[in-house]
Each structure stands twice: as structure tokens, then as C-alpha cells.
Length: 456
Image 1 (tube, rainbow, N blue to C red):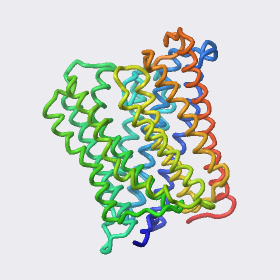
Image 2 (cartoon, rainbow, N blue to C red):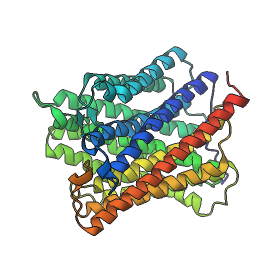
Image 3 (spheres, rainbow, N blue to C red):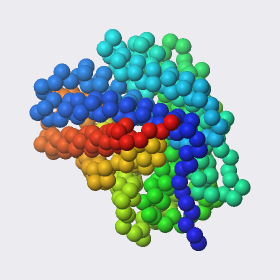
Image 4 (tube, rainbow, N blue to C red):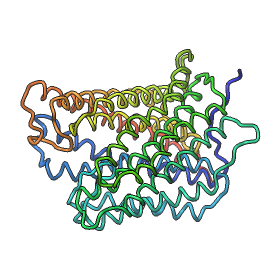
């Protein structure tokens, strides 16, 4: 059976510009998140933490870090993939969408400087309780939703003779539909919130359903990227485009249960929370068929060359970290820091895949080639640091250390607890280095474009 070519097509200059704009927004969010992540790690590391005013600072920094590195980065890359899947130019619409999203991001970043210092540590979209922060969040989400609607209206259809590019576009389309389901879940939660509820509990229940649903968007897009990285790094993917479509459909099936959760449970009930927790835990297994197919393609793959080396490195690192995070998810029993160990593994697994996508896209968008050696080691360093980080978190979580706290509030007493959090701190610092290396690689690619070639 001949190998299908799994690659993205950049159909026009408008698509190139729109894709580049969303990519730059995602990269800018990582710059801010990287700065905050270093301060967060220091706020939890033994001996170092005593020198920081970490309690109030830790919580404010954590809110901004999470929103930049999870919400804005991941949805910006979703915007990249949706832009690549369209076939009709709408430049004015694209400009408005990216302007709203970029303006919202900037507002979120500067909001602590103008009084937004009341952090609420709810899941998925933590907030600073201040009108300026709310405005930034609303602007960003409006920009993303505008781009989502534009993309759904202009997605390329499937080719008459189904090919690899069509199958990839179908995957991004499924992710778009899942995102619309997440928006609907948010609307249903907002409409059903009891009068008088406020504070952290309000936002916890408000984002609970939509937050779980959007994880299927990220996982779907990660699997799309895995297929591209596998093919581009020289793997022989023995699945047809039609079978790939089937795998994408399988991954969306669990989302069908979401309306029934809202009909069966009040949004502030324990049943509602448990239903979505189980959806994440067991529905996430729907990615196994395609994940196994990608891993199987790696089994007998030849040693990659040139660009394939860093794309393969990103792919392997993403698989290892995402799988580790998924396994830890089945260990969650309470509200300790096993939970962040789980999502740091899974979410950063998605992030590394998207970093590999950036390495793949930058030269194709008109920028310079990435430095091959540095791009090869960057995912490995980032993955290694995160593995140490989540092992330290999971280990300490076994002693009941609670999440979203720092310093003396962690209550570290035994040597083993201190050692585990020290391991967490070491891994976190290594992963920060890996994240900074990613920005260095990207900068070198962009700088080479500025001095060598321009795309009109």
C-alpha cells in the first residue's frame, strides 16, 4: 500500500498572513508565560521560596501564567490550524478577529499593573477579579469565536479522491465543532448558574463543563499534528485517509454525551462535576486508536535526517509526556497536587506537539529554517524537565500536599516531602530552560526571514 502524503497546504497569501498572525499571538503568549513560570517555580522551591513574597504574588502570577500558557497559547494554535483549513479569503474579518484576540491578551497581561490583584484559583480559566481582566478575557474569547465562525463557514471540502490534506482538514473541522460544543456548554452553565453565587465557586462551576469539553479540541488538534510530524519525519503511516477520518470521528463521539449531563444534573451539583471528570478520564481514551497507529509508525521508522530530526524529537517527546500525564490522571483521588501532575503532563504534551508544528510551519510561512541542532534538543530538554516536575508533584501528592499553594503553606515536614518538591523545582527549572530554548529557536527563524526574504 503506498504511503499517503500527510501535509498542510497554504492556499493563498491571505491564508499565510492569517496563519502567521495567530502563530505570532501564540508565541507572544508563551513569552509572557515563560517569565511567569520561572517565578512560579521559585515560589515553590525549598530554600529559594523563603526569599520571595510568594503568597499573594504566587496566586496572581499563577492566574496570568495559566491563562497565557493554556488558554491563549492553545487556542491561538487552534486558530493557526483553522486558518490553514480555509479556502476563501476574508482579510477584513481576519484582521478584526486577530485584533480582538491580541488586544484581549495584552489587557490580561497588564491587568495586574492597574489594580487586578484579587486572584481566584478556579480550574480551567482562573481569573483576577477586576473589570479590566474581565474585559481582556472577553476580548480574547470574542476574537477566537469570530475566527472560529469564519473558519467553519469557509472550510475546504473533502477532495473527490480523498487525500491526506483533506483528512487533516477534516480533523481540524471536527475540532472546530467540538469547540462550538464547548461554547454551548459555557452558555448552558452561565444560564443555569444560581442567583447570588459569586467568588471562586461561581467561576469554578461556570467553566467546569466547557473546560472539560475544550480538552477534546486540544487533543484532536494534537493528533492532527502527530500525524503531520510523523509523516514529515520519515515515518511510514500505514493508515488510509478514510481510516484517519474514522479515527477523528471516534475522538468526537464522547462529546455527544455533554447535553445529557446538563439535563441530568444541576450545574452546581456533585453529579455534574463527576460526570465531566469521568468524561475526561474515560472519554480521553478515544484517542488511543490513532495514537497507537502513530506509535506503530515509529516502530520501524528509519533514522530521520535534516528537518526530520527535530520534528521526530518533538513527536516522541509529546507522546511520552502526554501518555505519562494520562496515566497519572487515573491516580487522582483527592484535591492534592497529583491533579497538576496530571494536567502538566497532558497539557505540556499538547504544547510540545504544537512547538513541533511551529518548527514545521515557520519555513513554510516564509521564515528562515530553524537551527537544526538546537531544535532537536529543545523538546528533549523540555520533556525531561517536565517529567521530573510531574514526578515530584505526583510523589508529593501522595503525602497529601494540596495544590495551588506555595512556601510554608505547603506544610513540608518530612525529608521525602522536601526531596520530592526539590525534584519538582529542579524539573521545573529545566523545563523553563527548554521553554526559553524554544523561543530562541523561533527567534532565530524569524530573524533570518527579516534579513533574507519577505513574503508579500
